[in-house]
Every structure is written in C-alpha cells, then in structure tokens.
Length: 111
Ligand code: HEC
Image 1 (cartoon, helix red, strand yellow):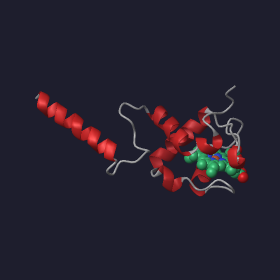
Image 2 (tube, protein in one colour):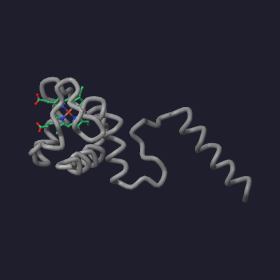
Image 3 (spheres, protein in one colour):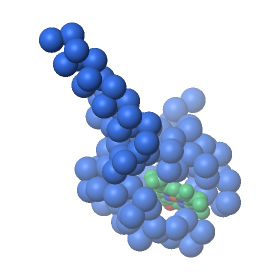
Image 4 (cartoon, helix red, strand yellow):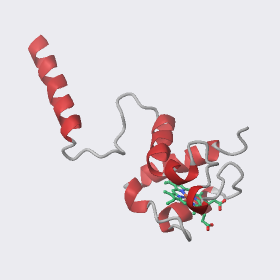
C-alpha cells in the first residue's frame, strides 16, 4: 500500500517536472478557481498590465479603472486590441478565459 502511494507520488512528480502534456496554465493541486484566475493573470497578463492591473507597460490600459463589461473584456482577450495581442490561444480554454475575466474584475477600484 505504501509502495503504491509512493509510486503514485513519484509518477506525479515526473509528469509535472517533465511537463509531458502539462502546460504552465494547468491548475496547481488544491487551487481554487479564484487562485487559478489570479495565476493565469500573473502568468499571461501581468507582464504588461502588472499584478494589480496598473502597470501600463507597452501602453496597456489600467485595468483598475477599466469600465468594460464581461463581454467587452472577453472580446479584447480573444481578439486583442492595438498593442495587445490576442490571448485566446495562450489561455487555451474557454474556462481559463472565464477565470481570467473574473480576476480582472477584482482589480477594479483597488487602492
Ligand atoms: C503585450 C502586452 C499585453 C498583454 C500580455 C496583455 N495586454 Fe491587455 N492590453 C494591452 C494594451 C496595450 C491595451 C490597450 C489596448 C488599446 O485600447 O489600445 C490592453 C487593454 C486591455 C483591456 C481593455 C481595458 C480598457 O478599459 O480598455 C483589457 C480588459 C485587457 N487588456 C486585459 C488583458 C488580459 C486579461 C490579459 C491576459 C490574458 C492581457 N490583457 C494581456 C497590452 C497587453
């Protein structure tokens, strides 16, 4: 029984370490949807927008004062806009896009 469990842990570590089929966007163990949305944002958006959405690198809009609704945010993520490239392929799944939109909304009006 102990052997079985250690085999499971070792194969899990090997899988994640070698990244066979795994992507940076994959959920970490025990990650809540909110945490996943935040991590996806940090991984794919923060280089331009900053973790708090205010960085404004490469002309990125300040997300803390953005007034866009869900549909408009989704449109920009999927299609990109001016200096912002489409993030659709990078985020990989509709679920990931949804989680990122939820996170973008939490950045609004933070001090
Ligand atoms: C390469 C830099 C870059 C990356 C990466 C990037 N953005 Fe942007 N983003 C921009 C720029 C530049 C704009 C301004 C586009 C314009 O209106 O001219 C923008 C605008 C936006 C807007 C519209 C804000 C408004 O009020 O008009 C949203 C929402 C947004 N980005 C979300 C995201 C999300 C979510 C991600 C990650 C999945 C992301 N961005 C990744 C550069 C980037």
